[in-house]
Length: 359
Image 1 (cartoon, helix red, strand yellow):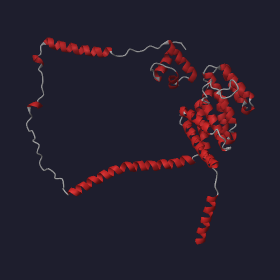
Image 2: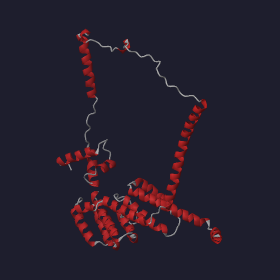
Image 3: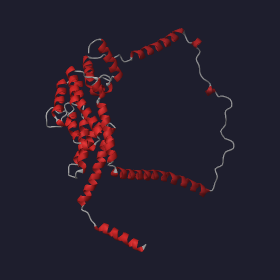
């Protein structure tokens, strides 16, 4: 037994003798921080908090600016892919030096470098969605020439060789079928859901949660301490009251009879005053009734008149339907100012415009 204790002490001493530099410790801590930031980015993307995702993505890129080995390269590539997917429905955002490369086209370029980090079936599925949505976004916004340019770009790049799919999309672009069933089946929402599934599968292999677990333990400990600090003053106050009662040694006596006098008969103040209508003259009654009718008419007049649809609002509605499609009233409300109107009002107005053949 003593020999085992000596051996363990010797190994502990040898471990403490192996000192490491501060830079090595800093690199390990930085990798933990980057893993935590990457996990937070994935969580924001999966919860559709795209505004917070954009803010934290810039912080992640700034933190990973110094070299930390090949461990962070893959995570940086995934963040670059997610950023391009978030901006996928915008044609004026550019990530590449080459002109005319839209966000989803750039996302397809980044996605091709992640082929080893994902299963073959999932990789092909997301690649098809990127190709279809690159064309569909252009058609929805009325940019048929941009859709043709996107198809040429995918056709010229050997990494995205899907000839059958390109031919089918070419016929859709030529006919200008913006809401073709094939495009709706490969929708932008399906692209987001497939990307979230990819993140779940990636985090299952590489959880990146060491710092998250340690921080969770510390947060739980701090929460227990705060609750304990709140309970202690309450308990001390109760103990102090009990000690004061014991020190006095007196029991509180319960009153058998109340000293408050009970009024059996009602007083004059309890009587309700009333006015007999027989004693009021007819002129006074007519004045009261006329005053009441005047007040009700005034209330009716204060009702807000209905607001008319302007030509500018109709143009906003038509542009929104072209951009997001019929039925996406909440997204159209976010893009334009409709003076307090709801999605139901937009749907009703669109039905009226279609019946009157104004659209």
